[in-house]
Image (cartoon, rainbow, N blue to C red; front, side, top):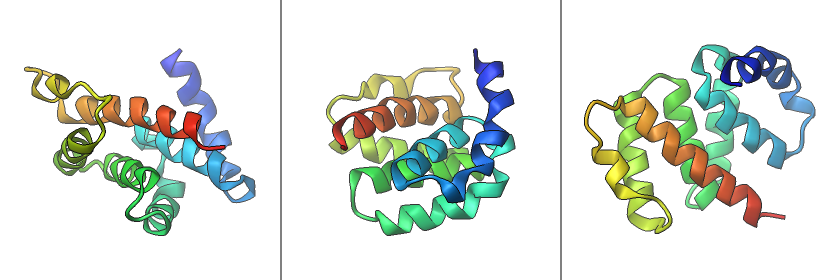
Length: 121
């Protein structure tokens, strides 16, 4: 499944400018899971994060942007901050041994981004 989604992602990201903000948000989070495909929208993700600065979506967009840039330690720091104020996350995951920082941060992004999308209408 991961490879199938990755294969479709470039076509989805090519539609970025024609999509509404909620879909752009979902695409930003998806792009973070496939950073090798995300280059075309990297700055758009940063711009969107700036627009939503100080909000839950903005925090997850900052996390997505760090992952897109390959800044795994920064992504983990952002994920750790999110876990501090988002009670539904399992903080123990962040301390899991032998799990790369990007994987830990991606897990926090995926769970949180889906929650934000499900509560935004």
